[in-house]
Image (cartoon, rainbow, N blue to C red; front, side):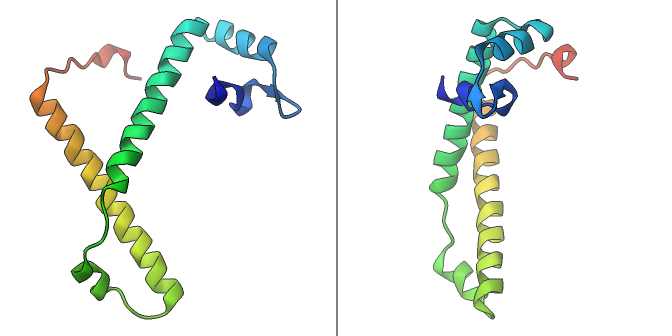
Length: 110
């Protein structure tokens, strides 16, 4: 609910407007139930991605390779960590794909 109420496309003067929300959904031929289920699913995926990513950190060896100016070293650390976290999430997803049968509805992909 909070995620929907904070959605910029549904606000007027910084405040959630139910009429705008309903109009946007109607124009897009989406029911509130469907949109809310999609939003719930997106939030769950985001949370899973964050949890998996937070479990990843740089090793001492990886940290030793990063040196130099503190600001540059921090940027390298963040970039390296971001890459490592993305790979961990991708690896997790690939592992799940191997375990379960997934049907891809290519006709729904635009």
